Length: 154
Image (cartoon, rainbow, N blue to C red; front, top):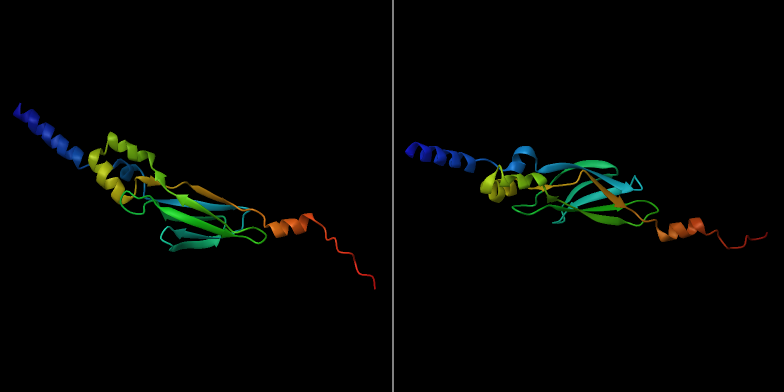
């Protein structure tokens, strides 16, 4: 009986030392392709704290952290401009990584409460983020309405 208890205690300790499930099979930063509709917009990606991460023309791919700290998902603002279109912005935010739930079976409390939240692996970003842009009203009106001014006669 003593041997059985010893084996059980050692097995429990080894199970408790496992790292988090999402940390094992996933990652904490993700490649994200930023696209705009229409393509070719000049976009700036800014962290929630106001720090600019990247500036470029769509489509562009960049690697972003999914975590903004312990148990905190990252949020980014994507601000785009394009000639003939109104400036547009949208929020890109991380969501819970499905592998994080695997801690219930494999990672235990250590994975749920410490490892995955600390490494940021509990969060995931989508592969693609699209910013839709609306035509500038003045440009759209000028294109669709011909000039009503009479030509001058000389």
